[in-house]
Length: 338
Image (cartoon, rainbow, N blue to C red; front, side):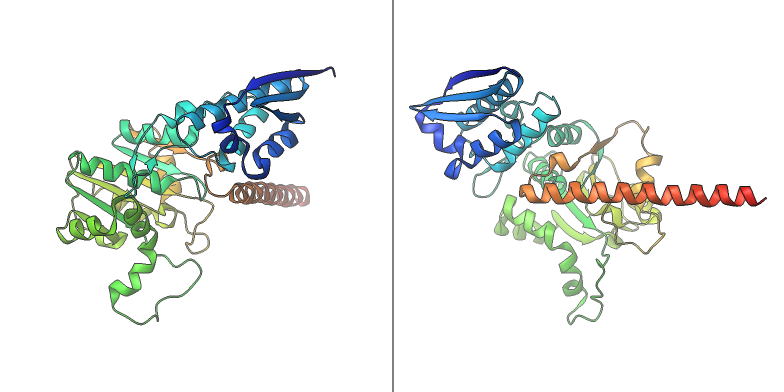
């Protein structure tokens, strides 16, 4: 295949951000796209076949736009653009970056970082109830929390309610010392952590004491009607169908609901159906309910997490295929004996 050369200008003040420490971003682009990148006096020279050099140039332009908007370029940004290039999908991270959700207590902007996350945020804006389903690290809970706090600050809702089922992840915590709240707090700690980061501990404590922000186990929702509130049900894969139905029928007027979960990480007893799994089938066609399905492409933690999620997905798909083959083989064997 004929080699070609493309050049583009990168302003000196953005070089270090775009190229990464020890040029790690360039090395990744070279490896994945099979191109050679040469840097000289603010000029980037890309050598390779026509298709690969064009993709590399587009990625550098995307990274430059991100850098010009004041962002620190991360390995995740580069990985995401390379993944899109391999799948022949045009993605504009600069356009996604314009979708501001809110700010952390330190003033850091909270924004979606992938197309999947952007669609999820838009669903929350548009729908009364949204299911965010996807693997760990896709920002399901964090983005929902940021949207809830923003709605609360804008007086769109009068309170925030955060809940999750108190299911032990393979460990028995029943004999831990302390009162009921002490035993429950470990299950709710991830929600507290996100609240402190976005809202600040002082603001959370003040609003919590007034009853305007509530963090509680799912069992505490029974018998209540939740009006004019932003309600987040986290780890919904660990609800039973009865618990999910109970929660969904608590919703009152003026409320917005986000239900998040990862169907690959159920902690329910073996052969117990997940309430999230059932709800995603039963409610699929109900008007004003949105479903956002995030994938390993939307993982925004360390790139290794994305690879781990992808490896497990492939493994589970293979195991499911083997099980179906076994069942089919047994079925044909029994039919043959008859």
